[in-house]
Image 1 (cartoon, rainbow, N blue to C red):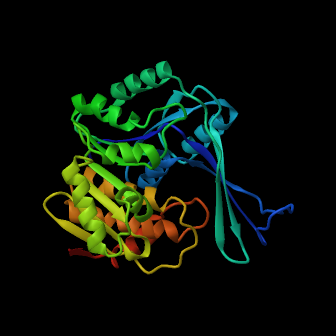
Image 2: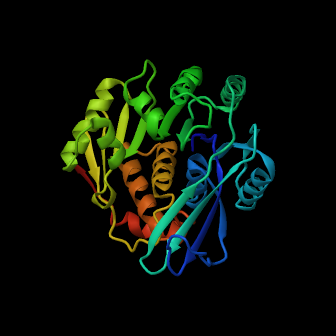
Length: 315
């Protein structure tokens, strides 16, 4: 299995709880929270670990909350590369309204980084990247970073011949979508993000796949994936357009489904499986994550069952 390095520059201590009903202007009596280490790259590494693979999480941690996140990661059996963040690690809160099963997610801000701190982090990241491995940049960049941070990291890591997979949002995603001199191997986004970039509805699967191909042609990435929720995901890589279905499962929590998708897909690629199989692995991992409570991500037994229901078609 080729090396997988996940990068989390704005991690969080995720707290998942529930209340009988979520209403404004009232004290809400919640259940005891379940703590988990959170942030896109950490979730990807946790998903890979739970699926029987191995990933090295590079994570910026600070303060007492950062210590708690590190303890949780080590307890989960992950061999982390801890980088000193310039402030306290943030927290996030997911509250499920038991009367409607709707989930409310509150994301607090992380520490501020200056230009010198970001440059030092980038140099450290280059030093721990193994040649010909996979690097996963997932989640938001740190406060203080410009929208081109992930694009700059792609430039930094070009000397390592590592394959870079990115799942981000907002200005960072818009910058990548505009095209890069050294595009990443893969760029993933959800339907809402794709429609925001396209500035139009992407009603059908083919609409999403055609937009993914447009982004490939623009130089956003060599492969682009658009997740369409219950309608599955589509992929374009310049040579083909594929669609994978989403398994029909009972959804308990969507937290970490996208990161589980990226984890399952990257693990398959690191095992040198073809893209079609990796696409199926990603979809099955995402569906399995939806079957677990709170922030538990995907379980191997659920993944193996759901994989049997996951099929690829050419668009």
